[in-house]
Image (cartoon, rainbow over all chains, first blue to last red; front, side, top):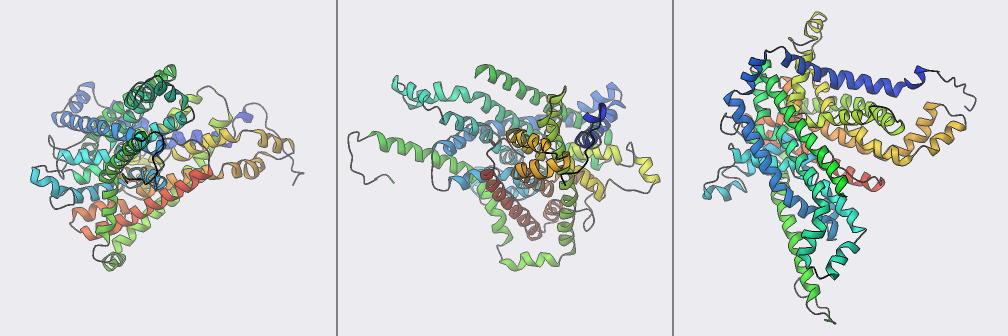
Length: 279
Length: 287
């Protein structure tokens, strides 16, 4: 075995090894080619047509529902996400490891399963829906259903971005101790000392959760009715256009969705840069 | 909980107060997780087994149900190895080389996570569908990709692409190159070094990535839904079966499929937790 003759390829070949070939080939065929197909398809439309499809009233209302419900879901998940991360890092309680592992359930549970069970629970006769029905709140097949589904699928993001930062802070308790010894009470210490370094992580988790919610399809298509101007979201609209073989319509709205994601991605990168400067 | 029977020495008030706040916060956090996550998850099992195990087992007599399980397994059986080999190669490049465009490659690797699954499915259709780029070519050769198994594999592999690379990169970086260089010096070639030195060193991180890839592959809905055509008994996966059965008011069958997927999710999370204790890489946002 030790006698294997190894000849080293020289020059360019030395850099162009199997891992390079597989990586670039796979990315090219599996990711870049499909992306190019989408952009090229959008490019075959005239700018006037693109504008007409992108600003069609049904599409505009779908963007509004998508962005509005995603923002609401991310906003609700942010304070509760910080709370859960805080509890998981600071307080050892029985069953903590299980609670920690189950935070990822919304990632692991298929979206159609999430949609199915949420639709059942929030139906008029369901466990939670029957409590809301007397108040006149209908969740399944309304925009509230969209909101409930998006809260579920975007729950882990803030928790998982804040948790490691809090964990790291554990190793330097003297900062909080200093604040306490200088006379700050617990809430003051939290708001003025603990929270500020967490802000970049909180904002990143918020943005990631929002971005995920904007693209969500499976759970929403089951719990909502998909009726325009009511509870139709953009990914479901893309799917409806596909079902009607309206590939131009699906493509243009799909590109708008990708643009929203890219803006959020850019925002996350800016937060990271800001966070580094802050730290 | 309020009366902890300890004798009060020195500072009588301060300790119980902190403890109260602590339990209040824990209770609040668990209540939120309970409403948002636990109740919906428990409900899947309750609904599936509400009339005992019999109706659940009865699903296995349904041809479409069994076929859906088969499709889900078959798709993962191809998509997971594809993404694993790719992820290993990509991780190797990023962790072991400094080159121009490294940051760009890292960004591109994460791109599938920021694309809506339905849009990913749309891309596959635009490429391989009848009116797509390769449509005429494929029709001439009588190969069907869209509305068939190959398209479903492509869509699944697309959405689950980043996991292995993301998990292996930090493990490779932590492992360092000392042992690899030692092996190399002792005369091992690149393959031998990889199989005997690198792979054993990254095995838990790699397995972690594979578990995540598999969970996403078997659980993917949107992308597969767009490219499958959703023909029962042919191109229907378990996740698609859940939706279809629900829409047909076959709630029992729907929950029968859902409970299998939920069980799979719980097993994945258990494996994930187990593997996290074996790797010391700080956790990041996954899925």
